[in-house]
Length: 258
Image 1 (spheres, rainbow, N blue to C red):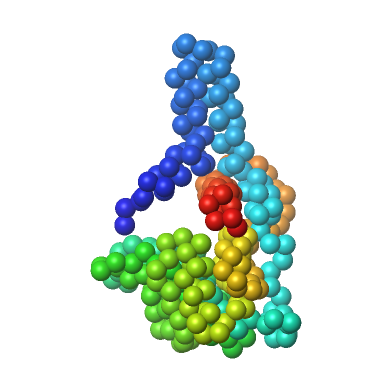
Image 2 (cartoon, rainbow, N blue to C red; image 1 turned 90 degrees about the vertical axis):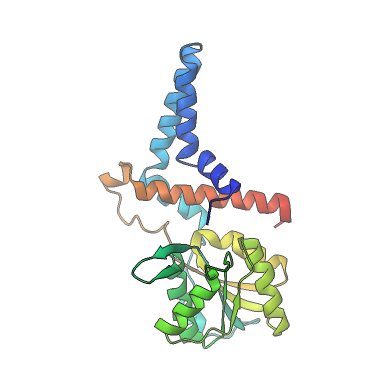
């Protein structure tokens, strides 16, 4: 599927695109405004260097992610409003994967799926998978997730939500399905950095959320080594995801009041 206008703007504004464009703008200004152009170009490159460092990525992720993961012991304990189901949010797809003969869940979706299955086996709760963006030629994310869970993990998926395009719509349409079944309390499975926005979205629709985050990035830097201060593509990708979440949280607050 083609990238929408919003996706293009995000690539142009968020790291690394925003810093690269600012640096180019500085270079273009230098002939007429040497001092200002030089400051803009150098500042942009310096910021690009900073957001490319593993130490920066780790710190930014630590600020955004929940403090702790769901304790395995908590899964079997009874709470005042115990979860009645598990909701696993989609994260995207790998298009036309030749070895599988079609679209498959991407790496981030697989991380969520694995943890969701792990949680389901220990809690014995029914599972709902959520994710749309399907069409006549491509299955929705939820359909791909359900197929993978049932065929490769031999775990039944009770419900699948296929209409959503965004996290907010994940919450809206999944909540409709859950409430129709009398379910108002869930374990919510998504990436740790994505959890704050996801929780607020589900709570907006009256769902009690027990966060079940996975794939923590803020704790990945266990020791402070020289490599933590050397730019890396992985660190740049992580900081880009952090900026994406910050923009998403701001947009959701302005548009949806969450």
